[in-house]
View 1: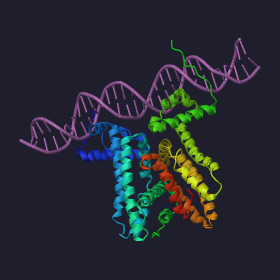
View 2: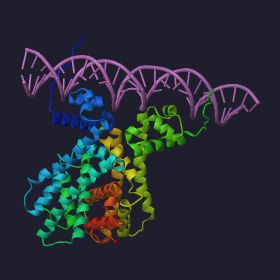
View 3: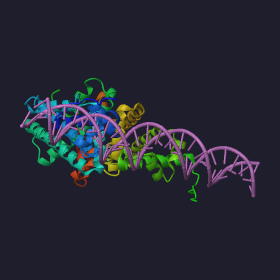
View 4: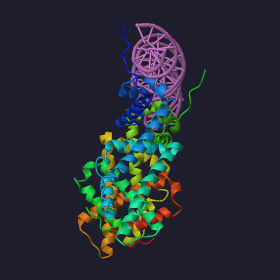
Length: 209
Length: 209
DNA sequence: GCTGAAATTATACACTTGAATAATTGCGCG
DNA sequence: CGCGCAATTATTCAAGTGTATAATTTCAGC
């Protein structure tokens, strides 16, 4: 007679979080098709049936995982703000450098981001999440740009600031992607100074490296 | 007694191409997990077994499809070069505008691109394809940038040109992504002039809109 | 310690998946 | 026309999928 595996009762929040993390791990490691209920359960140290107990369906779990991912990416860049200097120019330079170097630059995060981008065009809920997090990031960048321009006596109108934020955001996105996916293409530290210089040219500001 | 479905013999190239197109259609419509051998066969107007006849495995077919996708994206942007003016500044502006407006901007292409980016970190063959196509695009951009700088009497050294090409490429990538995934965020024509202005600031050139 | 309810595991099921094999058909060549 | 081979279809199979349900275990409250 085989004995049942022993288990411990965890709180609902802990279990949901563990299942979500396990889902993200699976997707990062092998793409969406690798995130099967069984693989997720193994990674979470749990039995497949438990997924059904905490989520109505696997689809629900995946949606929750993507929401968590997006929130984390946004919060990660927000957290770094606390460690940046108060001087607008240095602050902006630090923000830029942070966005294009590890740990923000990370193949795993990149793979997860690509997986979620893939869902955006055909999933309204995912699109809403993306739109919200995108605008949050861009608006934060816009505020820092406005501060920097004002600081250097080159204030610009709102439309220009908006355009610069859109372009600056795109620049950071593009550099983040390439640094994450082809890390060997760039020498150590090259991406950092490259990004700061490019951002400085975009704003016509002399950002401190 | 049920009669067999009638069929026609197509050439090998035609069948392979049809299967690859069907695969891309499936991935674009429903993500990688929707690209099952049966769905692909239906879309190609063929029986699942035929896939095995032309490709050793489904994995091989998917790899071939991604190679085709990447090549097409690169060739699409190359084709537009023929229609651009010879003047370096106007040429660069046209290239930029082309990259951030339809038909290059396209939710379907974006979804396919995301699907393939997702494979890059864990598939060496995909990484090689990405690296090759990325460098081809960037080198083309670098040459145009060098021409434009020389034209305006602001020649710059090779390292600077390289940096500007990397940043310019990132800027175009980022704008392309956002325009493709959140088309409603930008007014008609806004993305185009925004991109040209931002690119002009990056290079410190007055690009004609 | 008991007890009961909730959490967790175990089992079963219907379905889909990719692949392998056998049966048939189209069609170039004589 | 008919032969033969390769292209294509049809069928089958084992493995894996998500989910539903039943059986067990944990643990808080008495």
